[in-house]
Length: 386
Ligand code: UD1
View: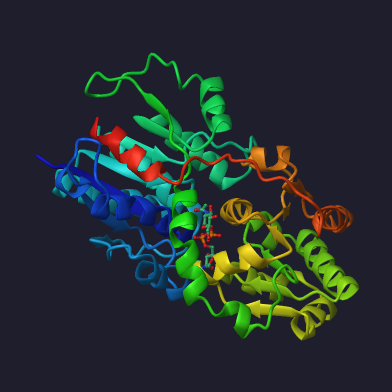
């Protein structure tokens, strides 16, 4: 009998991550010699956390992810309310149909909701991207990932550091037992985002026209993304980041491509002085564009001289495409990137951002092999089947 898995997604990066495993279910062969499609049936539930077409819908077609079987249409809202609506909706689906496990990605409110709903119903939780820690308890993502890891049956850690973090929390050798009597399992799986970036790399090169459309030169521009609430919702932090971007653009006469998350767009109106906002919006060197498609963003990551970002995913994809990153946060979960010198932590501090940019721009930076063999999805499926 096929194992029935419910995958829960909700935010943009989860659609991207889920693409790798969904593709393996549909097209890869298991070590048992039969296609995974004969062993696993995957259904997809979209919580509706992200709902704009350029934050959600467009990724399904581009990455070949099957349309969700369920959509809760939860939308935006305060964290408690948003998460509560998701738990309620996921619970109803899990009660109406039998599933052998729930597959979750990352650290969003959708991840948290899935873990709580399934654990209460004693359905095994498989957490992909387990063990990441910033140790910054004020981040909603840190809260979500800790709860999710502790409720999960199998933890798929992308890196050695993630395994070590789980060990420190007692999760690699824990006396905890789940409903079936089994203990928790921690698996070093590699990174499903690396699977995707490698799989779509040449397709993105063929299909994306962003480099031409914006008349960009290879390694001749900066890619910037900001979406974390501690950056967008704080006037001093947003001001420091935008001022640093304008200084880099003007001093180096370097274009900056700035795909804009909906929250950032709203908060520019609230948290920037009129003068700074006008400078940003009127600068001929700053290209503000809507949230980019996956193919466009990986082309931008591949060709940028330096990436400025507060996103974990963008940080990592830039690394896959050997582009250094100035990290607009006080800390990162992807500590290997900083240890390798391919990323520098600059927080939202103008002087640190400018100095980090100078250290990385045009310099010889090392990109060691850290994120697996681009077949994490198959490994994860084998583990789920076992
Ligand atoms: C969420 C995740 C974050 C992840 C990010 C990726 C949580 C706590 N955070 O943050 O970990 O890195 O997704 O993008 O789950 N909005 C729209 N249209 C949309 C979606 C959102 O306009 O389709 C606006 C709304 O004003 C909303 C705000 O963006 O209130 C924030 O959206 P939300 O899903 O709460 O968090 P993200 O910042 O996207």
